[in-house]
Image 1 (cartoon, rainbow, N blue to C red):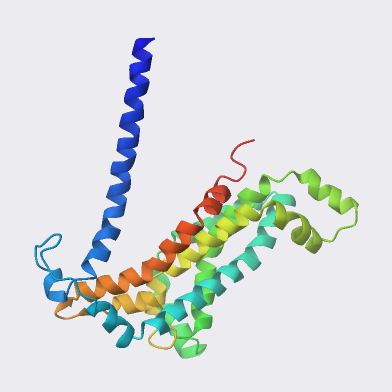
Image 2: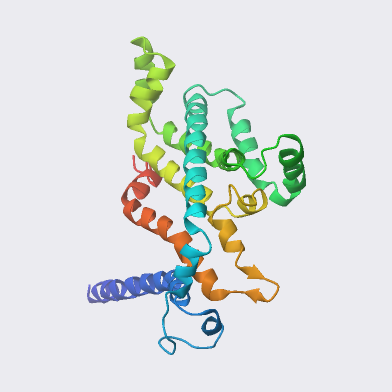
Length: 278
């Protein structure tokens, strides 16, 4: 009995300690990013650690004054928001059909959609650029970015929603059909309220994926539709990286997502664990 008690006390010390160590390891890059953003470019490359330099807001002032930060941030908000909304508009009916009206090809279709995520983006970069710039005329437009971000995240959206919808008893949907409820009514009045947590977490993750997308947002834009990823990529020159300015821009880019995730963590956890306990 004493051995079990000692083991339990040891576990109460060891596991929280390990959890704090892991948390600090994950948090350290963010801390160092914010810390470096208050250094000049010259100080940022010196092997100095904590308070052996004079903090400055020069990088943030230049970012707001010279880099037109708010235009890039506005483009990120527009493209991420509308790409998420369009992905849900397409994904909810698709997941509903596969969850409540499956066919013998449903699993094959789901696997095919997931397999599209395995395609290297570089393999279709040239045809995408040629098509959108020389034929369709969509290059460097919000519409193009919204369409691309929506399509590349749609398989994940459908997979997640399909998993959530499968946890809803089919008897509820069947009962509504017997009462004469239309398909649109089933989705709007029954499915959405029951699976709201899963839909909210899917929307949040999709928004984060769209916000963090760098490959397509950098290569399919020049000026008009450029997002924060383009602004970050712009802090590079033949002389090297401007680490002070780069850190300030990166901090301003990740801060909205960190704040969003912090205030939405309860809903996110509830959505991700939706249906996990029966």
